[in-house]
Length: 148
Image (cartoon, rainbow, N blue to C red; front, side, top):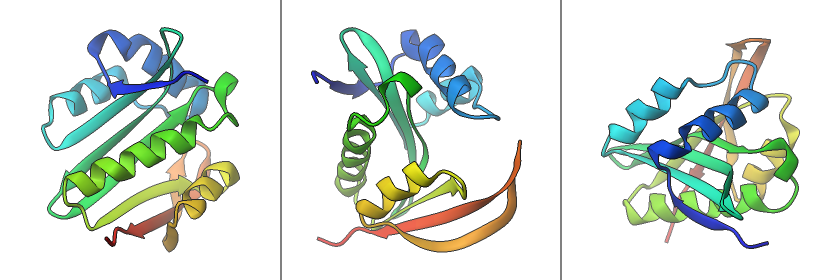
């Protein structure tokens, strides 16, 4: 699969919002993505295949910690290794920005995402009971220590 990972552009936002909406019950808005794109402490990367955005991630940094806030692949393109490529890129970016830890939250029912993160070395830090409201569900907080 010919896949290009590149910085997210404003022209990508309609497609990004569409993918987000097809993936989550409480999706991020276009204004959320626009706000993150303006932050120097954020990294937003799009995965493009044949001229079409098929996935993306959003991550931000504070001190020596990175938070992977969003990693999404369009439903039609899942189970093809795109999520793994996005995660590998995100972890490389975190190392380049001198992050020592990467944290994320994932729905307790999202077994595919949890498996992806566990395969990359993430472990469960804690559970936030009832964190998600649409529908009501626990969040699994995961962490990866970046050791060189």
